[in-house]
Image (cartoon, rainbow, N blue to C red; front, side):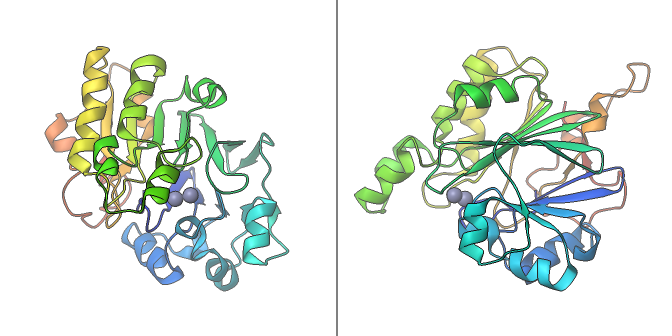
Length: 287
Ligand SMILES: [Zn+2]
Ligand SMILES: [Zn+2]
C-alpha cells in the first residue's frame, strides 16, 4: 500500500515482473515519489486500475498516463469524469488477466457511480480489495471467502463519527449504506464471514478525523480473538506512509522450510517506511 485514507489511495500489486497500480489517488508527483521509495519507476507499470470517480482514487491518473503511456483501466463513469477517451473499459463482473494475475471487478455500494472492488487471483492465493464500501454485500462476502489477503475499509469508529465536527448530513452520508465502512462493521464481518484461508487483513481508508489507527486495529483484533483466529495478522494502512511489502508467497512455502521470523521482527508496521532493501528485503510475512 503506497498510502490509504480519505486524502489519497494507491496500491501496487506485483507478480513475476508484472506491476499493476490500483488507484492513483495522490498527485502524479507524490505517487511517483512513493513508487520510487520501493524502486519502481512509473514507466515500469504495466497498468493502472481505477476503482471509482472520487479524487482520492484518481487524482494523479491523467498525468501518469500522459507522461508514461501506462494503460488505464477504468469504468465509463471514471472516464466521463476525467474526460479521457482512450482508456480500457473496466466493467463490473468482466474478469481479465494482466501479467499472470486475474482481476475480477465487481460493484459495491458507495456514493460514486460504479464503485468497484476487486478479487485478484494469483498463483500464491487470492486478494480481496475493497477500499470504499458502504455495505459488505453477500456477493463481496462470497468473493472474499477463500482469499489469503484482504484489504478492506475500516473508515471510522462509530462513536467518534457521532461526535465528529462534520456536519450532520456528512456524518449521515459516511455512516450510510452507500458511504464508508466502520470499524464495528468490519469487526462484524470478521466474526461472521471471515474465510478460513485468510491470513492477513489490511485495514484501509482510515479517517483522520473520525478514527485512530490504534482503535481500528484493536477493534479488528478483538473480533479475531473472539473467533479464535490468532492465525490472522492485521496491518493498518496509513495515509502518510507506505506499508511494508506483503509477500503472499510466504504462505505457500513448504512446511519443511524454517519457520518465518518472529512476529516482532517480521512486522515493523508502525515504523517509518524505511527504504526498501530490494527483493525480499523489507517484506511483511503475515502469518
Ligand atoms: Zn470514494
Ligand atoms: Zn476513497
